[in-house]
Structure formats: structure tokens, C-alpha cells
Amino acid sequence: MTASSDGVLHTLFRSEQGGHEQVVLCQDRASGLKAVIALHNTDLGPGLGGTRFYPYESEEAALEDALNLSRGMSYKNALAGLDHGGGKAVIIGDPEQIKTEELLLAYGRFVASLGGRYVTACDVGTYVADMDVVARECRWTTGRSPEHGGAGDSSVLTAFGVFQGMRACAQHQWGDPTLRGRKVGVAGVGKVGHYLVEHLLEDGAEVVVTDVREESVRRVTDKHPQVTVVADTEALIRVEGLDIYAPCALGGALNDESVRALTAGVVCGAANNQLAHAGVEKDLADRGILYAPDYVVNAGGVIQVADELHGFDFDRCRKKAAKIFDTTLEIFARAKSDGVPPVAAADRIAEQRMAEARARR
Ligand SMILES: NC(=O)c1ccc[n+]([C@@H]2O[C@H](COP(=O)([O-])OP(=O)(O)OC[C@H]3O[C@@H](n4cnc5c(N)ncnc54)[C@H](O)[C@@H]3O)[C@@H](O)[C@H]2O)c1
Image 1 (tube, rainbow, N blue to C red):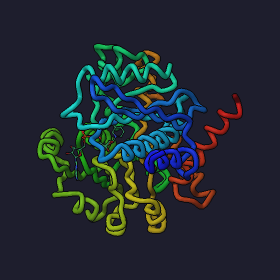
Image 2: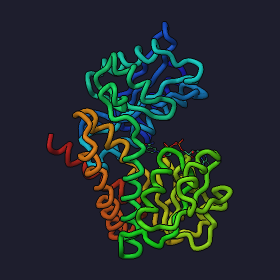
Image 3: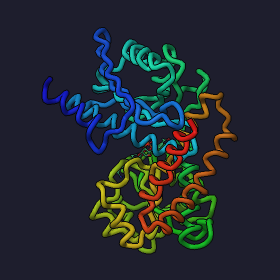
Image 4: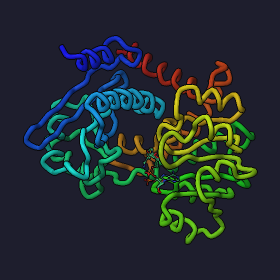
């Protein structure tokens, strides 16, 4: 046995990050597919999570990502109130270079071979059109286009869910869910961020934005000239009188430096993995900054793809996404009563839901 396979087995069966139910290594030589499908926990139902297509530095790095991401999905799905466990897949390689129909079909056959224990969807590097191809080989595919029976773009409901989380922050922090008169800074006005701006303006908030892409900023300011634009995220987090900071770009927005500099008393945004490292959640709490866990408030997208399995219904989905308001409030209450940061409280609630499902079996 080589050192690296020993490393894999150690991670799976003996390490702190362990506890996964099943990990599948997939290879199709004809198309060049190399993929890892990880199922963390299926107590609540079939594992649900997207397929990341990424040029990993090594196979070990890909496996580690699959293990971490699938674990994250167990918590996200449990907190979203879905009857789904945590699963995630990664395809190794540069999608720009190696993504072909043949490869996606081969991938679909691997997902199908799990007989419904894993349901796939889009993630970084995979798109609605890719899921349409995967679905030709595998019925446990969501995130497809409306022409192929899917729900299409998930950013509308993701933004709506983040807005609900933000209303819960306002309720907890200021005793009223409205954002009227609050100054909200949105970093990243892409697919999700620009819809979030619409909700905020409609509710009467004052909005400040930044984005590295000029077109993204222009799309917002052309429609809403009253929105203020600042040069970059460094400037945004220092805006005087900022009430809420909404990271809606990439991960790692909350690090030692940004937490120190932040003028806002609340952080609530769509970006995945906002905490740059363990311990940042405590620094936020120590500074009295209320942090709404990203995987709770950005669950609108996964709520949408789960709904697609039963024939997508936008209104039903919107109702489910609206519950993010109650869940976020419940987390803040639990954090207060347990004396822990909201992230720890969220994890406890998710673990309780999984344990209850296990006990019912
Ligand atoms: N789309 C969904 O349904 C969904 C669901 C859950 C979580 N998320 C997460 O929300 C975030 C945004 O997703 P999206 O679908 O809107 O992506 P997107 O690519 O459409 O938008 C991201 C925007 O951020 C901008 N950006 C990148 N780096 C930046 C920086 N350093 N400073 C300022 N702006 C920057 C980009 O130019 C882009 O306009 C991501 O972290 C994503 O993982 C998205």
C-alpha cells in the first residue's frame, strides 16, 4: 500500500474529518474522466450536492475537497429542512480543456450506478447545460434547464433566501425585520448579488456595491442610479455607518484583517465558505458582530434543485426558502442560550436533525 492510499484510508476511517458513509472513485479511460463521489451522511435521505469540475493540483486534493464539500452539504441540507443528506462530487481536470459530452455521459453512468443514493447538480465549473447531458444517463440529476424539465438558474431563490436571512438578522439585532433605512454593502453583484440588491432597494435600504467586473456594476447602476459604488471590497467593509456587509463574491471574505476593519455590525451574504479559517467566527462574536452562517442563508439554490426532483414549482419553493428567516432566528436564539457563535449553534441544530432521523429508522 502506498503512502497516499494510506492517507486516504486514514482520512476516511480514522481522522476527525472522517465519518463518511461511502466514497466512490470513478475512472473512464475513453473520455478521460476521473471523479470522486463522496456521500457523507444519508440519515435524512439521499445525498444531494453539486458536481465541482476543477483542475486540482493532485488527486489527493480532489478527494479532500469532495470529503469536505459533502460534509458541508449534510449540514446545509439538514438546516434547509430538506429530506436529503450530504453528497458532493468532484471531476478532476480543467473543464475548459477536458469537458466533453462523452465525459459527462460517462460521469452520469457512474452517478446512476449508485441507484439514487446520490443526487447531483451544478457547482463550480458545471452548468445547467452540463446537467442536461448528465441527465441523459442518470435520472438522479437536478439543476437542468427548463426545456429539459429542470428549474434553471438558482440565483433568484438564493438571493431571496439571503434576503430572508438578512431580515432575520435585522429582527435579532434591531428588533424589527425591515431593512428600511439600513445601509447595506454588497460585495459582488453577479447572479445572486444583483437580485439581492433588488430586494434591498424594494425594502427601502440604502445600498453600496462593489465588483471587480465593470459590467456587473453597470447592470446595477443603470437600473438604480441611487446605488453607491465603491472601488473594492477593502473600501466597502470600511464604509462609514455600514449596518450590514453582504459577501456575494468568492469565499474567504472574513479573515483576521477584514474582521478587524469591518464597520458593519452584521454579516449576511451568499458567498460560500466566508470564514477564511477556523476561529474567525469567534473573532466576529468577540467584536459583537452578528454573523449569519453562509450555508444557512444561501440554501435557496439547494432548496430549488431538491424541489426539481418532484417537478419544479416556483411558489412552493419560494415558501420553503422563506423559512430561512425562521431558521436563522432559531440559530441566533440557540447561539445565545448555548453561549456559542451562530456557526456552532447551526451545527448543533443540524446534528440534532440528523440524529432524530437516524433514531426513527
Ligand atoms: N448561484 C447560486 O445559486 C448560489 C447558491 C449558493 C451559493 N452561491 C455562492 O454565492 C456567491 C456568488 O455566486 P454567483 O452565482 O452570484 O456568482 P457570479 O460569478 O455570478 O457572481 C460573483 C460576482 O463577484 C464578482 N467578484 C469576484 N471577485 C470579486 C472581488 N474580489 N471583489 C468584488 N467582486 C468580486 C464577480 O465579478 C461577479 O460579478 C459564490 O460564492 C457562490 O458560491 C451561489
